[in-house]
Length: 285
Image (cartoon, rainbow, N blue to C red):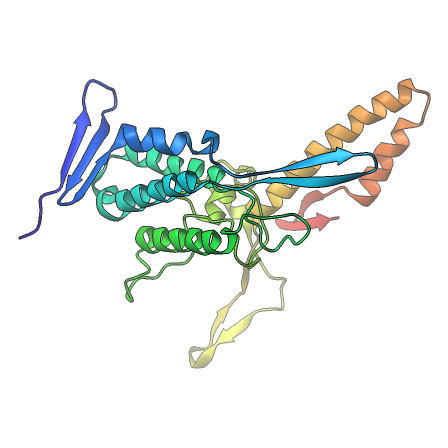
């Protein structure tokens, strides 16, 4: 007989927030877990690496993580994994979002002097073991959230993004929000590329490029989908950079220099412009 799953919600709040989770030996108090994770970055035993400048050089001062901090850290990891494995599918959307936000806070606390690939700076003696255990935590969390342990599942990408301290398998592209796939961070509705009408994101290849589909002889035209979301992001950032250049040009003009030449140089070498000809996007870089 399966143990009943008990979820205790506080209905004095609007919307209600889940305060406690119970299932057999699993017993999580939301407020205790929340406080434990949120105080990780300020834990007195958390390791740190300081740079001391002296004369023309500098040296490093290492404060290693204490055993108390490591125990606290992996206790939080266990509670987060416990929630995601047992209670996450049965929780309400508001509290689910709070727990995913706690994963963000947990990752911030994991930025420690454990970079074993950085040979110039000292690291904690436990850096290698910590990094492997940390990577395993996120592999386990992704297996839970994406159901990738099921051979019939079709996971495409992770939804919990570890910055991977063991091996540099991928470039660091910035902090991701937990619970979202990487493409969703930028290309969901409301991102810069979605100001472009749907029909403008797809266009037919030029006339004469038609082909016939097999024995049916049906005439088809190939279509190409333009990643307007990604291009829109680049265009947005370029416009922002151009705004900075124009501000600098005003200062240069006040100092007696040719500020407009700076803007012209930016437009010539850096500017990213998108125009449309016969509904076909044209890129000018």
